[in-house]
Length: 102
Image (cartoon, rainbow, N blue to C red; front, top):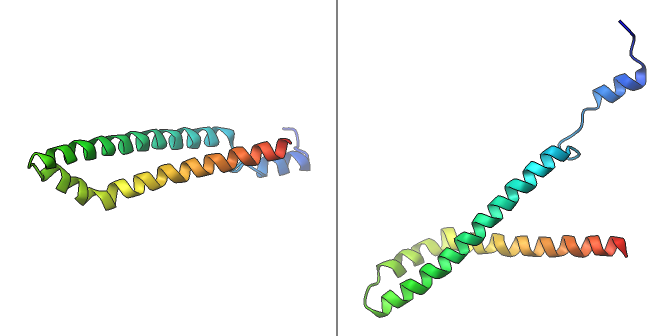
């Protein structure tokens, strides 16, 4: 059995970390992209629900608006906040990349 050199042993001992593993980074990016797509659809559905609920409230049917109001703080506020944060982070990353190239 051939002996391994010290450099090979050191290279084998230094396994790639999660931060430098491109497969893990691609899976994480895909997962985050899927989460943000679902978040966009949740915000759009909430806006449509609100519009319909306001119209129904004007007709004397208050149930949908009351349900929307009860879900506003635990569901729709974080969804809108996540969407805004993702837009800001995306803009900052784009700016940082352009700054590094110029």
